[in-house]
Each structure stands twice: as structure tokens, then as C-alpha cells.
Length: 250
Image 1 (cartoon, helix red, strand yellow):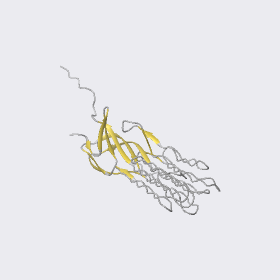
Image 2: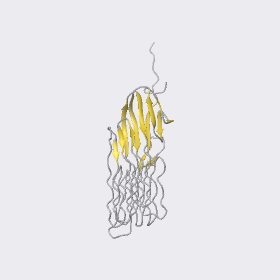
Image 3: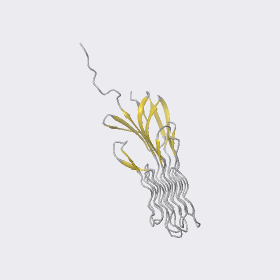
Image 4: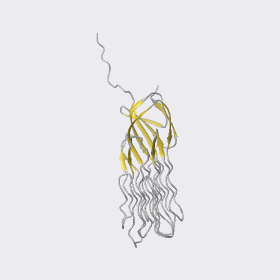
């Protein structure tokens, strides 16, 4: 009997990897010690309105190691936040596993007025004219390390929109409309970057990639921004606890 079932199962050398791209159950058939965990929430949607709009903040990211007791554990993978045609983008949804919760990214600011970015796992970028970027909020880590940063505050008096914060750093703000950088992980067996902030003030805004936790871009002037990317949960552990061949003594 396998140690556990649930999600899309792959193998990386001596390790089993369960990848959840949508909500499901992880069923542990025995206690699993020191499992490696990655939890990424959905990214925030970009702002959109008459003026210059902020990018969505990345979904909060939790990573580290935890013990998993035998039994069925709910896995929730947060959806990305939707853009808004004439308002601040919607926040992304939380992702959870085994008592740990990563917070959805904050929506990017966007209305006909100067509007701050929303708070979230990483904060959304502020709309034009010095509107404050949203704050990054740490979730319930359950012993995991949490990553999330503030959205960008654009230059006061300027026609800019701040980028959303990323798991690897805050958005620069000022006249720089870039989003905050993401954070790389090789938990799946391949190095990937997760939870990058959406850009502010884009002529052709790009949505966050599915299961990346990236924020959606904010729009330049009177058009909608882009949706945030959905989150992901990955669980990795040794397939067999004792890899050495037993030595029999005569």
C-alpha cells in the first residue's frame, strides 16, 4: 500500500510528490515524518478604471517541513482574483493544508479616484498619484515559513500604477511599474518560480499563470485589468523510509 494518495502523483528519485492544482483530499495511509510542503494562494486581480491602475499582489507562499498524521486531510487550492472593470481588483482566494493557510493576494487599486492596493498575501499595487500599495499579510504558517510583501506605491502626481508585491520582494513603486519578484522552488523535481506580483499600468495586461499564484496586471487608463493566477499545493516525502538494504548475519 502506498504511503498516501491524492492529487497528481509523480516521483523524483527516492521521493514521492503529490501536486494539487485544484481542491481535493490527501489521504495518508500511515504517519509521514518531515514531509516537504509548498502552499501558494491565488494571486490578486489587476485594477481597472478611468485612471492608471495597480497590479494584483501575488498569493501568499508558505514552505517548509511538517509531520502528517495518518488520515484524510483536506487540500484547498485558492482561485485567482478576478479583475474589475471599474474598480480595485478582487483578492485571490486562500490555499490551505493540514492547519496551514496561505492568504490570497491583494487586488490592484483601480477607480476614477486615487485608490490604494488591497492587503493580501502580497499587497496589490496602488493606482496613480501616490496611492499606497497594499500590505503583505502572513497566514497561519503551522510551522512553515511565510513569504509575502507590499505592493508598490506609485510616484505622487505621476501617471503610474504600482505593481503588486511578490513572494520574493516588494514591488519597487515610484515610476517603476514592475511587480515584486517571485520565489523559486524545486519541490516538484523541476525548479519553478511562484507568486510573482502583477505589473501596474499595462497597455496589454497579462493574467497570472494558472497554478502559479501570480498577480494579474493592472490596466493603463479606461479598461479592465487582468485576473490573478490560481494557487497550488505540493507535498513531497521519501517513498521508502529506509533505503539501505538490510545486512543479514549468519
